[in-house]
Every structure is written in C-alpha cells, then in structure tokens.
Length: 332
Image (cartoon, rainbow, N blue to C red; front, side, top):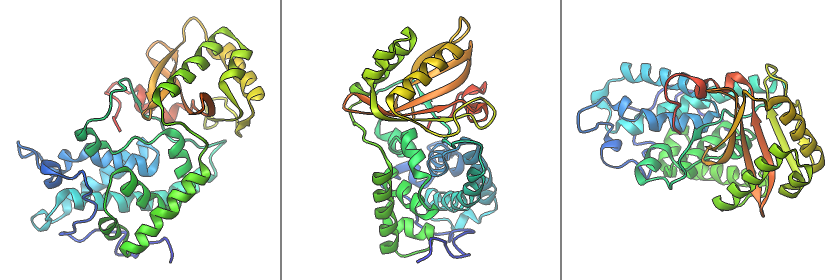
C-alpha cells in the first residue's frame, strides 16, 4: 500500500473523530478545556507543539503547523467536535504529513548534513505524568536524525504510538488507513530506527560521565584523553547550513574526530566564549556560547559502554534562533 493518505485525509478530520487521543489524554487535557474554560487550542498548545516538533524536527516548521492548525480550528464547527484534543491532534498530524513531503525536497538540497533543531533544558529530574501527557517521551537528537530516514506515514505512526502512546485505531483515523496497516507502519519504522541507529546506553549517569570526560579533555587539549572517551568508530555529524563553517560530510573514526575537536577548540574557545552542560533533547550535552548570552552551538551525544559513539553539532544560527530568542525557549 502506498504511504500517501487519501485526499480526504490530507485536509480535515471528521468533526466527531476520536483520533489520536492517546493514553495520556485524560481529564481536562482530553476535553481540551481547563478549569477556567480556556480555549481548547491554547489548552493543548504545548502538547500539539510537542507532536509537531517530533514529527518535523524543526521548531520553525512546527510553529508554522500550529498557526495553520489554529486557523482551521477557528473555522471548524466546534459544536460538533466531540473531542477537541483528538480533533486537533489529527489536524496537526495531517499538516505535518504534508509538511514532511516538501521538507524532504528542501533537505535533499541543503548545504552539508541536515540535522534537527535541538531543544534544551537544565533539569534532569524524571518527567512527571503531566509532563509525559504534554510532551511525550523524550526523543534524542540522534533519534530525530534517524527519523529522517522514515517515510512520512512511518514517522507519524512511530511518533504518535511510541512517543505519545496513541492507539493504532486512533492513528489509523489520522492517516486514513486500517489499524492493521498502521500497526505495520509502526513496526517497519521501529526496524528502520533500530537498523539506522548506533549503539547507545540508557544509563544517564554513564552518558553524563562520558560527556564530562569529553569536555575536560577538549578543554585541556588532551588528545589521549579524547581517544579514551571516543569510540574507535565514532561518527561526528555537524550542521552549519552553509552559514557557519562546518563539515559537509560526517567525520569517521576517533583519531580524525579528536583532531577535529582540538581544531575547533582552538578556533572557537576564547576569553569571550564559554561551554556549559545542559540536557539536549533530554540527554546530557554541551552548549557553546559564542558571546555572553548568545548560543553559537549545541552538541548532543550517543554513548555506549562509556564511550561516545556519535556526536551531533548544530552551529547553523537559523537552527538556534528559538534558543536565543528573548522569550523562554519552547519546552518539548
């Protein structure tokens, strides 16, 4: 079966659709109204933004989707909408589906390697049930990069089911196909994610320890220290978008990567710059401030057996705009 939904699915969901409520859609969130009677769209905006970001890997594109979803919500006959959250999730899913088609063409002509826009947080406490309901499970920058290999339908099924715990019956309504076909999409997506991903550990303490060792060795200019923490087969990804100097292709191997890192340190680390730890898409990573208060780069890592197996460096300023904006960066 083709991954393209029907023309009907690509426009609007049925008003009374129960699609995409998910296991987290309980209480006020499921009805789309809070105790004060806040409009359903605003009540679910954080959740919808989280879905769109994980579907698209871009805050800019996700915000465009939310703007269009808001216009469609305003135009809808809300009196006939039985479940606002379900209705809005279906609208956002279909808009993201359409966006992924055009985004793929743009990314194929992108200068160098295209990486997702990173998200940042500074607290590593476990997510509360309320946070999971709004933001879903954390999706690392590495996983977002792997999701680029999926078809739009595979990505939608994977994100909605595996990240937001949405049932297959509900996802099927969003994608205009049968629950069995949707289940197969998610299964195929999982296999492709597993095949496309690198070895990784689920231990946050081990992950942070490796990142700290990497940062310390880099600051000392210690190539032996870098070689000790880098996996021999490490892959270094970077995205400058043709705006900032960055590798056009991934750099392979610990020797080449360690030399690259020391070159970057000598170029980027000055008296006016600084490097800080932060959670990058929910995992320990690094932020480079090109000047006080201005983020010039974000680094995410994949760690296995105490060594870094992949590194993702985003220095394209257009992908850091949401982090340098005066307003509080979006939480996803």
